[in-house]
Length: 232
Image (cartoon, rainbow, N blue to C red; front, side, top):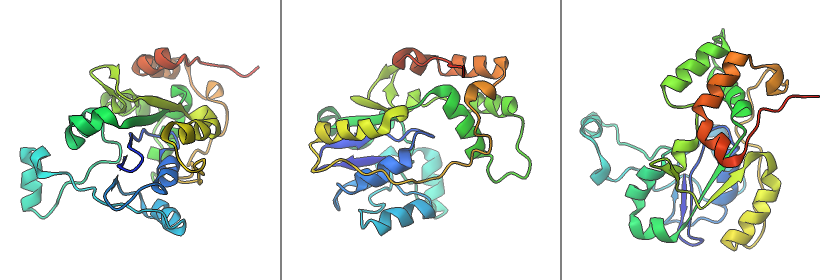
């Protein structure tokens, strides 16, 4: 997640949508008073090579602590702002004045394609990957298969502008105009895909897997008009 006071935007980072690459690109326009949540080591190296603003101001304020958070603090573990923090929590974090006056940004991706990418990324360190259908069921139960809750509040889209993963180059041009940036953000290649099977998602998913994803991600499918496409 990024909060930029200079350019007055909040970036709500979704999963498996080039969010890390977008964060690195937008870090260029951040200053010392802005919020930038941490990456993994490899992504921080990319950001540092560009001499962009690094992770900072990412500790959760104490007034947002739960009882569990206070117990962890007593054990020496201070709570950080999660990089996939949901819109409702961001609104609590920044306050109504900032939330209402800053541009809220996010990004979405075809849910069937994203689910496969999420599967390979999440299981990348496992010696034997679980069956895809098993992984999807677990992701459904953990509420991690859909990105919609990240950029919505109460089933209503809270982001002012949701970019499309499928046309990110064009989206960067739109972002320059929307935020009045001095140049078009340059997207690095970050958090490289762990996807071993490069086939089109229609050649990978079974009917059961396809329907499970469609059910869980029905809101973004309807909102953005995504369709399950097959190769001719």
